[in-house]
Length: 165
Image 1 (tube, helix red, strand yellow):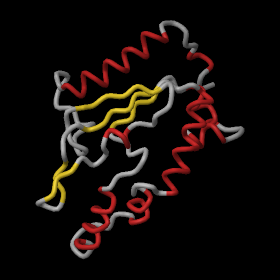
Image 2 (cartoon, rainbow, N blue to C red; image 1 turned 135 degrees about the horizontal axis):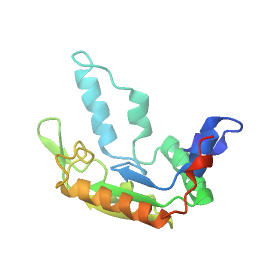
Image 3 (cartoon, helix red, strand yellow; image 1 turned 90 degrees about the horizontal axis):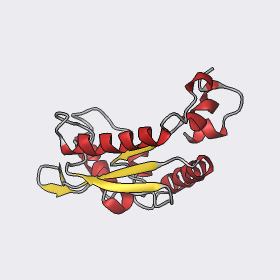
Image 4 (cartoon, helix red, strand yellow; image 1 turned 90 degrees about the vertical axis):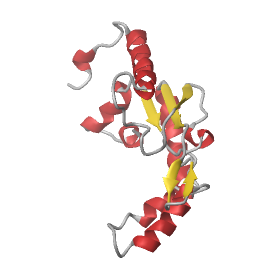
């Protein structure tokens, strides 16, 4: 989204103005203490498993300069375009390292904290926050309700004929 807002003269530039809402599902806007746990797990199992990108784990740590910069840039873009946003957080703990469970992205990190954002929880852990078992799943119902709300607000105001031309 930030790239779209800052790019001149190509199709990517059209993404930001065409965006009508953004849903975040367990996004660590302010980092996660679990990134440190992930780094430890990575170091302990690197020989036996695929290697995750340690730089990504470092960037996702609480008080990360990278995450602060990206978040600040995104907030400016979101406010410039007045995107409605909904940030969902996980309500259940995720099991880590066989014996340790934690909320990977707590509510205070899942929130951007800007004016046009609404927030709420989904009764799942971080691994399953975006995995819906059926249309009767509570998380599915909550996300769909938000999307339906945005669609009804648009109600004929959107001219799609010029959006991607």
